[in-house]
Amino acid sequence: MPSNVDTARSVTFTAETASDRAAALIDGIPVSLTEYRCPICGGTFTGYADLKSHYATAHEGAAAPVVAVLTLNGRNCEVLIEPHWTLKRTLQFRLGLTGAKHMCDKGVCGSCTVIMDGRAVLSCQMLAVECEGRDIETIEGIAANPKWRPLIDAYCRWDAMQCGYCTTGFLVSAKALLDKNPNPTEQECREALAGNICICGTYPRHAQAILEAAARLV
Ligand code: FES
Ligand code: FES
Image 1 (cartoon, rainbow, N blue to C red):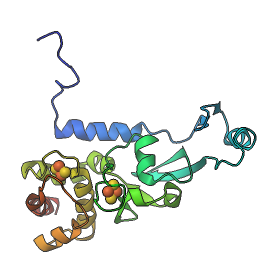
Image 2 (image 1 turned 45 degrees about the vertical axis):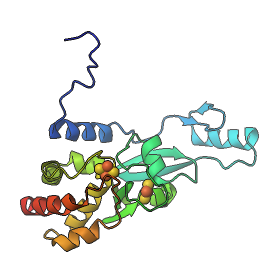
Image 3 (image 1 turned 90 degrees about the vertical axis):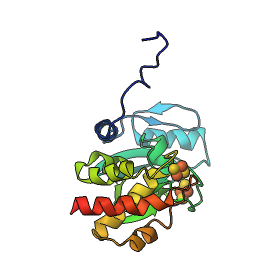
Image 4 (image 1 turned 90 degrees about the horizontal axis):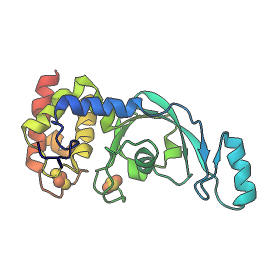
């Protein structure tokens, strides 16, 4: 083996490793905060009250960060965010869940789709603080759940992706559809995915993959 082999790239990618990685990401999210970091000056505090009083003296007039408790993939977790942060930004930059993708950031492309209280929603259009008390499911939760392997496998078998950037958003929309309608028609699949845009133009394969997954999931 050449000495300059990038060992990270030599890992064989399988459905098992994807599922394991998703589960590890979810398990790695701390349940509660142990440190409160000031986003303006980087000072760290051991309690939220200390951070608030630091803001009042050092950054008078600035909106202080808030603590939100989110229910993600069946688990509660505390997160320290600025009040204007979207759910997408919070997932990516606070919790390390990058499956909800950043693309348009305007509610147009569907790449950032998550499931909230059973509905597919755009995480770039939700403030994280609005999501407290709601059940949020991300592509990581779907990938880690063996029940949904047939859906992911069907996407791979039908090769319903090229660059793959949009694929997680499509998969989340497809899962939301199958939760509500386990036996969709091709037209219902197309309608459920109407809010997802694929720049690579993979549209014809998605409905076929979902129909195959539906037959295996029953
Ligand atoms: S990034 Fe949210 S809809 Fe495009
Ligand atoms: S597969 Fe490339 S954007 Fe959809």
